[in-house]
Every structure is written in C-alpha cells, then in structure tokens.
Amino acid sequence: MAILLIALRLLATLGILGATTWAAGLLIFRLPGTTGTLAAVGFGVAGLAGAVGLWSGAARLPLSFAVLFLGLLGWWNGLMPSHDRAWIPELARLPSIAREGDILTVSNLRNFNWRTETDYDERWETRRYDLSKVEGIDLYLSYWSGEAIAHLLVSFPFADQPPLTFSIEVRREKGEEWSALAGFFRSYEMAYVAAPERDLVGLRSHARKEDVRLFRIAATPAQARDVLLAYVADVNELAGRPRWYNTLTTNCTTVVYTLVGSVAPAWKFSLPLDPRVLLSGYLPGYLQRIGAVRSDIPLDELVRRARIGERARAISLDNPDFSTKIREGVPTARP
Image 1 (spheres, rainbow, N blue to C red):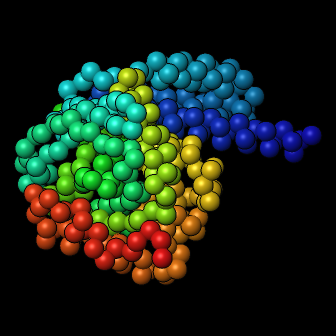
Image 2: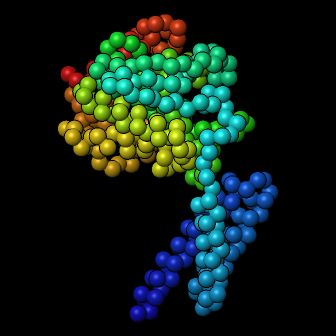
Image 3: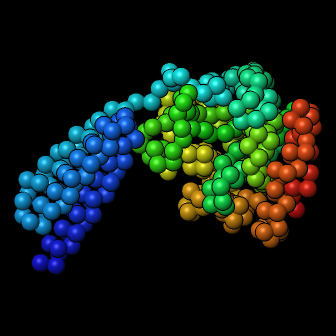
C-alpha cells in the first residue's frame, strides 16, 4: 500500500509539473511582455507549492493549484481564432473552391511574382480545373534548416494545364514573427494557400534558396481525384470557419496525413502512425516504407534525384514550362 501511495504521488507530481510547464508557456506567449513573464513565474511558484503539498500533507496546496489550473484552461479554451486580422500580404486571402460537376473553380488562387522574399508583385486569380484531367499527386519537401524538418507542399498535375498546388501555412499578422514554441499555445491561425507551382515552389527555390525535393506519389488518377476532393472540402471548411495552427497537431504534415487518411483505406497502402509524420524531413523513408513512392530505387538515390532546387533556380518563373522542366530527371511514380 505504501509503495502504491508513493507511485500515485509521483504520478501526481509529474502531472503538476507538466501542467505548470504548459501553463507557463501559455502565459509567456499569450500575455504581453513583462506581464506574461511575471504571470508565468507566479504560476511556476504555485505549481511547485502544489507539488510540495502532495508530499507534505498540505492538501490545500495541490487543490489550490488545481483550481488555478482549471481557471487557466477555461481562459485558454475561450481563445477563439479569427479571419479578421491585419494579415501579411501573401496570406491576406484564403482560397475557396466551388464545384460544378467535374469543374472546380478556385477563387483567391495566389500567383505572386517573387523576386525576393520581401520583393514581389501581388496577384490573386480565379482559375478553373477539370477533375477528369487530374493525373496524379506530387509531393514537395522544402528544407531550410537541417534534415529533420521540411515544409510540405502537395501538387496535383493536370493533363491540360499547370499543376494546382496546396500549402498549409501559419497565418501571421503584420509584424508578427514565427515561433515553433508559440505555435503550441493558440498563437497563430492556420491558412491554406492554393497556387501554381511557379508561386509556391518558386518562393522556396528562387526567393528563399531552400533545398527543394520532389517525389512522385504512386497514386492513380482516381486516387488523386479523391485526395483533391478531400482538399476541396477542407479548404472550404477553413474559409468558412477559422482554425488554430498547432506546431504538433495541426501543421503542414499532420493535416495532409489526416486528409489522405480519409481516402487511403481503399488504397493498396495504409498510413500507419510513425514519428516521421512529425519529423517531416524524414518523410521520404516513410513514404517508401508504405509503398507510396518508388521502392525499386534505393532511398539515398531517390532523394538525390528528387533534389530539384538548383535546377529550378536555373529556370525563369515566367517560363510556361516551369513545372515540366523541374520534373526532368525525377523518378516517375511507377517503374
């Protein structure tokens, strides 16, 4: 009995310390300046007191902490996302997609002319796409710092026009900086960008000089259509109701994982849980494991041939064959 009691106290102590750490982060990132720091320090003291109370027999201390933490949870739960903020220009508009039969009409499609990351011409368009002409799915990973993390783009090639590409982004306000830690605490809304590859890929290959890699997914046109329609539904849902971005659970990889998972049960490969879903830089190994990319090519060779960043930078973004040329030398979806 004594051992059980000690084990329970240890678990409760870990729970209090974990809750205190999360709460301190919330206060630091959601309250301004010194106010957030002081509030986090005060909450930290309350958490330590609650942990001490578990072992000293002063029950009022952990109970007081529990009440304080529940109050903080109530405040956190009341933080509501919004579409009505002073957004940075490249994320000022959210796409919406209307469907009439096989025809998709994409409004607020972004087609910026990027010279540098801060020097560009804004251009928002409306384009129509024929679902019966979608040919497959291509996946871009853009690396900017090491091999563990990359930004994910999903692109749908069409037989009669350049691909339609989607990116899931942190929707920042003007003057707001990105912080992965802040992304755990309802600091940013989520945004979709629908664009041609000259915009979304070109921003990363040309303006940011990132290491962009392209992988052709082993999806049939019918499967690609299913995934595209899953995107359409979620794009429209987000356009109608804002959503928080979360560094861990609602990001450029996990949202795509959920969308593809909604149609993948009918496919030949499944989508098992894997740490590489979160460590997006290692996705190629995961994709090869589940049979979504070529398995007859060694992974190192597949990655080498997927690097299109340097080749893309040699092609003008105004070249009408930009999407075709960056695919040259990249392994096809099937042998």
